[in-house]
Length: 273
Image (cartoon, rainbow, N blue to C red; front, side, top):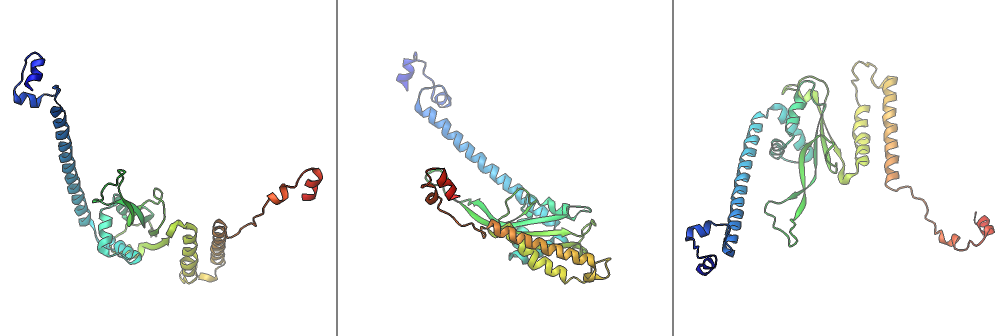
């Protein structure tokens, strides 16, 4: 160090000023600031994660305190339908970014539907180590989450709640004002899921319905009979469309080369025709 500064005119700095200087040519002074910066960023990153975790925990506890009989009704239906425990469903709901949609569903003249998807979602494990190429191991994992139904691909099970009126949903009327149902779309086969839902659940339920409101004749009413016929016809059309898409109707494959290779003149074309 002394000889270096002698070459710069003998202006030798003290040890403390050398360590604080960013303009010396020593490789030591170029490594230390970079190392300290990395360490500082790690500390800040760790502190940021702790603060975010603290905020998330506070939000969850605040939402947990809001849960009442209405939420309990939704949670119990979801737990029964998806085969999860009520505690698992509750934790999922209060951790969801779209938790406010539940309150909008309960409000007077609120959302007409509340949707939940239960399907595989790609997730990275928090303790996953980096691969040699720098990537991490991301595996699909079944998740339950609230959705509007228009932003995520539907590839699993949809659990839905539908309102029957514009009245405010309370703990006392939630079982009368809210209907629950499930729609299976395993492997992304939406048409098959819809066909099964209508043919095996909705149509049998409609045909066994005794109370049709203002229509006193019930199933004997011509309009109701026309309605049920239309639903049956729609399911039949749906089934045909699904089979067509699944290549159930196949055209015979023909080896066209056998016919084409011998065509030499117009008469051959006429013969082939």
